[in-house]
Image (cartoon, rainbow, N blue to C red; front, side, top):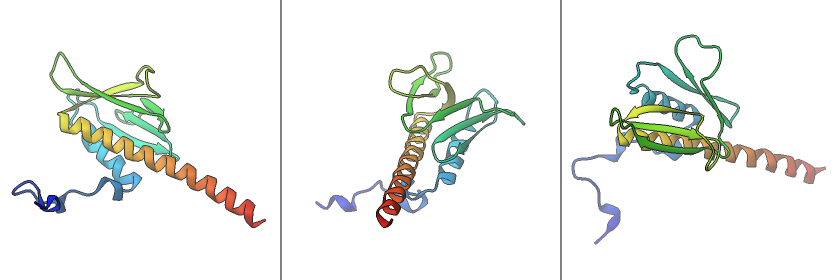
Length: 143
């Protein structure tokens, strides 16, 4: 049996972008769409300050982000709200650190997608740091 030809009947993969081929801006838009499903009525948006500082903004015209977290060691957890039964996504700076904030995303699939997009942004952040280190070391070798 050829495993490469297996798939879900009636489902086409063409309409799903590969998360590894998405830009940072694409991942931020995906996070915005996921947070739009929050049950609290607040409008949230995600931005990056440089390649490694994720900021979550809430409300209209807020001058300061509600959450700000470095992507280098960010941890994403999710749980079910005992009050609503909806999924909550929480970000913390590192394993066992307290969360900096959480957002109601609704469904399990949305929580998984949120985590995936944050992890992809984390990978882009780490790759940018390695690229900067490589550029410094190659220019030192050229001297």
